Amino acid sequence: MARLTHKHILLGVTGGIAAYKSAELIRRLRDAGAEVQVVMTEAAQSFITPLTLQALSGNPVHVDLLDPTAEAAMGHIELARWADLFLVAPASADAIARLAQGIANDLLTTCWLAAAGKKAVAPAMNQQMWADPATQANLDTLRQRGVAVFGPGAGVQACGDVGAGRLLEAVELAGLCADQFQSGQLTGVEVVLTAGPTREALDPVRYLSNHSSGKMGFALAEACREAGARVTLIAGPVHLPTPERVQRVDITSACDLLAASETAVTQAVARVGSARTVFIATAAVADYRPARVAGQKIKKGDKDDTLELTLIRNPDIVASIAARADRPLVMGFAAETHAVEDYARDKLARKRLDLIACNDVSRSDIGFQSDDNAMVVFWPDAALPAGVGRAELAKASKTQIARQLVSLLAARLPASESAGHAPAPGDPSQTRHADEQL
Ligand code: PMT
Image (cartoon, rainbow, N blue to C red):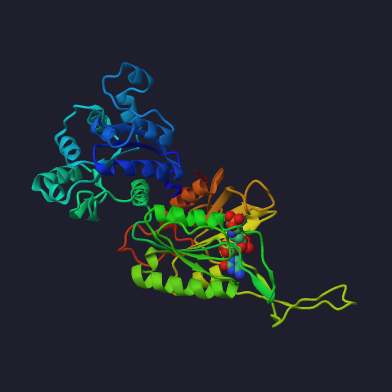
């Protein structure tokens, strides 16, 4: 959940038995890369101590509006301004009522009024209190002001009642926090994305492959999801966890990858149309495979100093997708060790791509295996003398590079769902400024 990297989350904890869950929530938010500050009401401190939340958040917990020492360290206005997202969890019926009414009679409610960033509440209360029209009216008021309401869940409650009013689990709350930072650039779009290496079997124990770790493709899958797309990630053999809410299909060889890609694109186009479907080919596909796969392990003879293999060409997956009558927007990658930009521009034209992102895989600090990358992206642009637009993405984490690639992609999609088919490469109506420096 890299979406929370460096995000500032101000967590407001109010009084209720579910306050203990704030400890796990802080851990989840920090695991996702967020910085967390905590403000507690007086009642919350009867359920969990500030010391516990201080230890977990790594920051002093804020409890008192009128504490000059705390104010000297980080005043409440500064705290409110610091927050990218102010989440009150658990939010008691009383806290929700005070927030809805604009009452500022303690530190938490004062910070709430002073906060200009995103706001959310995660209600937790008895099911009857939840169902009460006063509570529902207060929540409607908050919703109308743009406050997100996370949950509540339903089930057996601490008081023994059964019904709605349970605080959502920490993992769900952390996911919903991350969703608040979705750019929405790919809302309504289906992305089919390939990642990792392929393996081309020689015999039951050996194969031809390459150094791709899948990191770039997985980061892109997450960035597309973060931007609101529905994502199908077709992955070669890699050791990476599946990004949340991404559909994963595992494959081994280039032929498997072609079949899985054709199926996923057909399904995506059927759901949203070709104009709202994107195919991204990050996978490092083996260009050739052994002409014959031995049924048993190939044995070396005493006198065999050499072994000759005959390789046959694999299908070109990205070119096949780009050649479909119902072609989606297609983005290829190019991994080169020299003349990187020249080869990339050639592949852009030859494979009839809408964009190509190239990287120099001769460098050890970027490209294969690394957590970082640096890329140059090209796209056809008939309006430019060179016929191509160009954007340079300076060295950054693959997560950050992926987000920039999403922006470039989104800019090349037709403006609305009512738009027609994906533009032909070179369509000037789809152009973006040349030499964009992201
Ligand atoms: O996985 P990482 O360790 O994070 O490394 C990331 C990466 C270096 C693998 C990635 O950034 C990258 O460059 N991926 C493309 C690798 C590649 O196969 O490049 P290529 O220049 O050989 O192929 C050009 C394009 O054609 C690619 O989009 C490739 O997916 C596609 N292709 C290639 C051959 C083939 N038979 N079918 C294809 O679809």
